[in-house]
Each structure stands twice: as C-alpha cells, then as structure tokens.
View 1 (cartoon, each protein chain N blue to C red):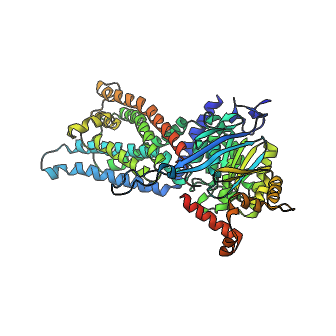
View 2: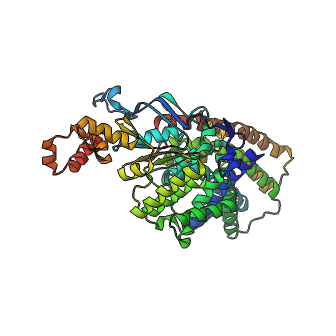
View 3: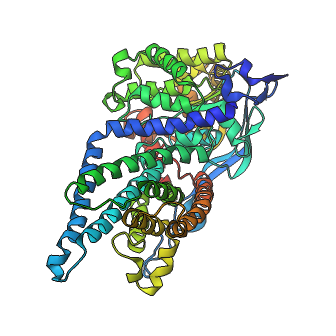
Length: 322
Length: 276
C-alpha cells in the first residue's frame, strides 16, 4: 500500500512529493560494516619506527550487522560502551557512510537518497548539542525552520512540548548554559519530537535524567509511536527502559549483533543456556551477551562484585581500543 | 513552491540564528568593534605622520584616504570572511554540526543563509568603523562616488563568500587546528591584495597571487570610486568589475564543490562527530 506521507505526519509540507510504502519495513540494515583508521601523523621523525601496521590501526566499529525494523516497532539496541551502537545510529542518520552493506528507511537508501531520508528521521544523541548561549526557544525555532515549520506554529508546538517535558515557561527563553544537563537533554528530546519524525533514532536519550523525567520521555516515545505511527530505534544502558519500551531488543558486542528477540525470548534463551527453570533478568541477559561471561570467580573476588568486575573489564577493553 | 519555501525558511533560520548569537555574545561584538576602530585609527595615523617622518612633502589627505579605504575594506572582508568560516567553527565548538548536517536542506542553502548574515554583519561593522575613524580627520570626500563603492563591495563579497566556503573545509576536517589554518589563508590575502600599498611594490613572484585575489580589485576599484569619483559604468570601474564577476562566478560553485568533497570525506572517516 503506497501512502502519501503527509497522511501520517504533522509536518506535511516537509514531505510533499515523498511517498512511502507502509507495507515495507521501516528500517532495513543489511550486512553493514564500518571501520575507522587511526590517522597517521603528518610528519614522522626519521629515527622513529614505522609504527603500527594498517590492520592494527583499523578499528572495526560495526561488523556485518543485519537488522530489520517493522513500521511502528520500537527496537532497543543494547551494548557496552564502544560496542558500535552510536556508529550504527550515525549511519542511519546519514552522518556516516558504511564501508559495506546498505541501510534503507522505508525503501530509501541512506547514502543515495540522503536528502529524502533526512526528512523522515530525527535523532537524539547522548550529549545535548546546542548553541548554549541561546535559549531553548531560539535553538528549537532554528531547528524547526530547518525542517520547514512556519515560525508561529513552531513556537506554539515548542512551548507545548517543553512544558510537557517539565520545563518551566521562564526557562524557555533563558540561555541553555544555565540549565542542568538533564534539562538540556530534555530540550534535545523536544528538538527531535518537534518535527514528528517517521523514524526516530534515540542514542541513550535518558542518560542523566532523573527517574520522573525518564518516565516522561518514555511516555512521549510511546505516544509518538501510538499517535504518530513512528518507528523507533533506541540505544540504552538502562535495562528497565529496554523492558518498558522495546518490542524487540538487539544486543551488540564488538560491532556484531549477538542476540535479537523480544525481552521474554532473550530471558528464556539465557535461562535455557544456564539450565535455569525460571527466566533470568534483563540485566543478566545483557551481561551474558556482552562478553561478560568471560568474568571468572577470581575476578569477582578481586573486585568485590560481579558488576565491579564487569566495569573493570569494560574499562580495560576501552583502553585497548584507544 | 513548497521546496522553495522550505529553502527560504532554512536560509532565514541561519540568518536568525546568527543574529541571536550576535545578541547573546554582545560583549565580544563590542570588543571586536573597538579593536577594529582602534586598528583603523592606528593605520590612518601613519598617513597623518608621513610628512613628519619622511620630511618630504606628502599629500596627507590622499594618503589617509588611501589607508582608510584599505583598513575599512579589510575590516569588511575580515568580518565577512570570518562569518563564513564560522559556519563550521561555531558548530564544531558547540557540537551542533551533526544536527545541521542531518537537516533536510541543501548545502547551498546552508552556505547562503550563513553568508548573507556575514555580509550584513561585515557591512555594519565597516560602516561604524568608517564613521568613527573619519571623525578624527578632515578628509575631502567631495568627489566620492558612494554608489560605485557599495556596488564594488557587494560584488567583491560574492568572491569572498566562495573563498570562505572553500576555507571552511579546514575546520571541518581539522577540528582543533582548522581555525588557525583559516587565519593563514586570510593573512596571505592581506599580504598580496594591496590593502595598505599598491600591489606594484610586491616582488614579481607575488604579483600573480595579487591578480587572483578578488580583494585586489575591490580595493583598487574603491580607491578610484572614492578618490576620483568614477561612476559604475565608467571604463575605469569596468576594469575592476569584470575580474570580480569572473572570480565570483568561479569561486562560489568551486567553494561549494570543494566543501561537498570534504563533507563526503568527513562522513567516510567519521570526522563530523565530536564524541560518543
């Protein structure tokens, strides 16, 4: 079924002449890989050794990832720091070109059709990036105009969203630099919601938010799917959030998807592997698939707890990657 | 029609954003304005003192006017050139570059929006500097043709926008060092374009660079317009107009093309990200 996109979004003028096939999957990621090379110094002193070989300098951030997300689905991507989650989100956001494979959003290729894809998506990153001297209103009106929203309509909607996210009226026109990190993150979330994207990419959106704000954001995400038919990809470290929001969860480790399924499916699977009769927690699922199973009893004794041993293991791995 | 409206809204978005930034950073603006005025005065006082220093009879009025035009045009070019390269610098600084590059707008719209503000900002700065510095001297401006002067300044701006867009590639690719690299480009333009002296005094090997620089034609043309009062349609002004048309027509598409190559390289190598 082909549907002119303005039937399903709040900002039809942005999507004039763009047609989506709602019978297609919203997001198709097919055998996508992306590696980064550490740059060589421009000048090397003659007595210095040649240094690392090319293969040592290359870091595989995303390794042959295949994932399909249906329309109106909320899919969580869970993984340790440096596992490739943000790289994958950046590829979907048209900010990175994959080395191999392809990604489509409702059939539009993120590389070849980047200008169409950009009208369909929006993104929230872990760090709220804004012109910090400007107010939330000034930052958001700028974003709204880039997405073809008329000024008066945008102002009304900005106030509505920010108020709903718990930002007081007097803060809306004050510089962002005076706001807490959590408040800034709420404004970043408002920026993404403002344009009512058909595919929303959330990269650890609730990191740094208090529990009440996390629930506000989760309610908003659900509303975006239920009312506006949005499809949502969310990366998170928060297992409760993953359980509360996600229809399916993909666990990514060292650039590869190592597990994919509903929360219940993954819990049962890990329980089966461990030979337990009762399902394990999502926390245990995460630890199991993110190479945490390499942690030994000796490590637990050495660091005092399983979680502390895991943190130490992650820190070591990040050091090795740098 | 809707596409046109979208691109217009986006163009205005950059203009409005930059105006808001100027308002919020008003203290910086004031500092730069005072700096430019003091700098302009320092240069023009060289003209005032020439007779004393050399002991020879010098047409002081002409020399002050010559230097005043040089320093004013240089202020304009510096402010507008900075405004263009700041397209990337500022966004790198704030970490917003990924959001701007993700927005559904053409790079041309992005550039035009930012450049329009840079031109208006540069004009305002220059106008204020000119008023203050002129007040210190009794200059004979009875022959000045201001219409020709503004025409040449605007025409030259097109070329400078092209140069600025190409130079904005540096902070795009080199996060920390890009800004300093763009200062080198500006310094070379200052050296070869005859801002404070005729280009004929430059060594022979520098002369071709002077002939490529659009600033050379803007400065020479402005001096003819202000000192001799030549109108736009005069052969004297035409000799500066046609090189500016050529550099303008070539530099803007070339600047956008160079920028698009750099953008693709940045997207391939992950240089757009700040962290995360």
